[in-house]
Length: 68
Image (cartoon, rainbow, N blue to C red; front, side, top):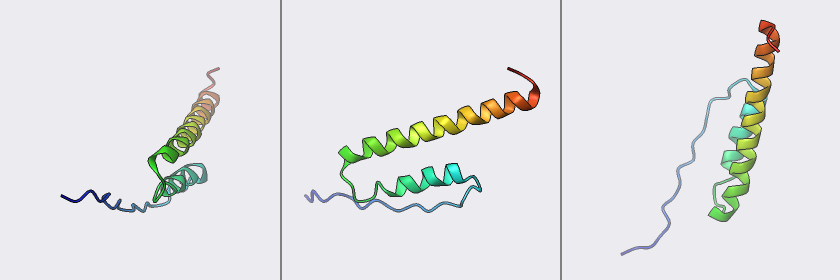
């Protein structure tokens, strides 16, 4: 029985045209080859960045519709 770690397939993506999203997707590539303990800080950063993007999108939407 082999105890080798399976190789993780790299996934490329189409740029979204939104630099703030593409930067987050680039961060996912940093996971490759790192031990799982280091994944946590990358996932936390990705979550924070995406959360900020969503908050900004909600604020822009509210301003466009006149909601406060």
